[in-house]
Image 1 (cartoon, rainbow, N blue to C red):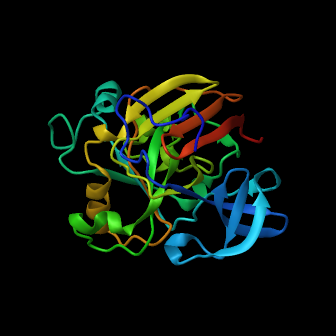
Image 2 (cartoon, helix red, strand yellow):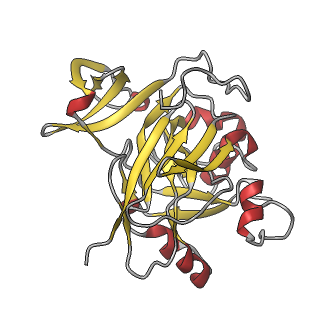
Length: 281
């Protein structure tokens, strides 16, 4: 499990405590691209991810000898805005339709080209005046989902991973819609692996920059929880295996600069780490 989780916390104990949670990684070992189940310092190689029927092949790869890849290759990344009350308050964003929280999930998309893995660099694009990381729980879809009823929504989930909704604030405010602000290459760090068997109901979500905590929330405080999001989104668009729903960010967003190291940590999953670097000339 990730750093900072020497055991289940005494306060706000997450429902996954005591459950068997598997960490499924996608990685490069030599010239091969592989799937593997994390087991201490090794990955037990799979012939496919478990949500697609994958089985262990008998091969083992030392964690020190592999390079992690993004844990999935989504056809789409569906993001949810204004899904924590404290973030709504700090952002000052008007809630569509009025009220304290959105009556329905507020959606936007990130392109698959924005995805990077744990350890890869977030590029600071020319023209960006403020770059903010946002810590989020990401839902990984395990099987095709179309107009899924709420009661069956979690049956379509493969697992969960860490997500960083990197955002160019000056473009977000200037454009009035968020495609450019959220869609640059490297603006969707994802990983380090998919946690299978995790209960998403009360997971601690943190963002640290250079080791100092910026954000700290809990998925128990989501305005629209995971099952509701999957049911809602699948009523609009068909979700394919490997697609991602990013569930929103808690309060505490603040800018980063080149050289900063951003860590997104979620209880039961682990830590996604990416360094911010200046864009090439």
